[in-house]
Length: 413
Image (cartoon, rainbow, N blue to C red):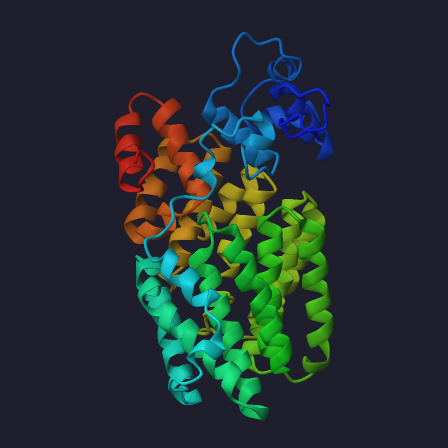
């Protein structure tokens, strides 16, 4: 597809032609795509054929982008001036310090003090606890990660033998935590660096638990980049590698097996395969049932509790509006112990309301999400898009509250 730059001399596609190309690439009919954005088939045909006097407004373009699984609006518009930051959010003030720590070469600090493993383990566990208990989790992590990254990298460089393998496992986990900080920020290069390094460190640790963690994070990175084939391949290869250890797994490894099954479900939902998505969800639920009732894995949130929120996500991704509403009602009072994960779940519930065009419920749910976990909403592209639509094109009686929310999350900055 021509990207609008015309470097090859090929004709530059119009906005309508781009939408038609992206729709056909996904095997989607006009009727289906039009329905997903609340428009008629004849309207969409007019857009694709360039028959409208004016191009669709930004809120509709954002809905089309989500329905077509497009992360960058320039794929639809060909215009880099369109505000695409709705998909990434602003950069956190601590991002530069985290980047510097990741980029630092560990042997430069070889003359420094290498942390004992039990100290590193305690610091990493504390970072995970803070991540889940803080409503402003990126700010909290931004204070801890730079030193933790540097010390974990140095330990993995300086120790030898079995101790070094244990350090590599903790380094992989540290990179995974770093990926959670970097996600949804304008730092795709850094996200890929930490995702790749996490898997490399996990492989060098020879620890199946660390490997499953590295695979989970890297598969997420590929899926979020819309590289669904790579996400699936990495996921399946990782599960194949840890399969020999599943005869008598510990609780954490069993939870990772469930989490990887759900990741396959999520990827299938993103590609529109409902039967496969719900099949993997069923398998993940069977795994969750084998976990202690009060267990909650810090890396992936996998647990018995999370399966209902996971079901909301699948239904939303599959654009099953009735099922999404039903699952959202079932998950309404689920006591998710992680504040950022609770905030993300509320964003998914808001998306479920959006499928049914219940704008008041969308706004109310997003307001609750913002009160629950402000930085989750501030850095979530779906939340930005929903708030933008309400503020710019929502019902008149909702716009003042939507503008207030947009201001609180930095959308109007």
